[in-house]
Image (cartoon, rainbow, N blue to C red; front, side, top):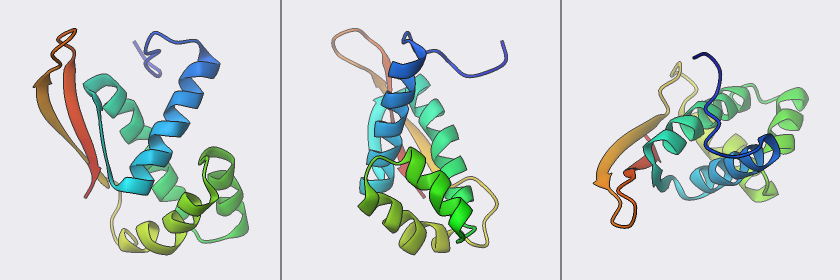
Length: 113
């Protein structure tokens, strides 16, 4: 089935959740979540990093419209994007951790490489 995963949420809730998770990932460098959420976060986070590699006004407006914290967006342009200037994609890594204790959901750690 093409398209994005719905993650059991309505569109607005899903977008808000992904914005928060991507912001936290860019802020801290790593995030622990379920495997399916990690795959969605990877997709969006890598798009944000790719946009930030073009350090122009349009890119800044696109990133600021998605990332929820201004300081994290600044960090993305000043520290994270220049680090990946020569790299074409593959900015994140997903490491599987095993099942969660309560509901046996497959857990993973997503981190910036």
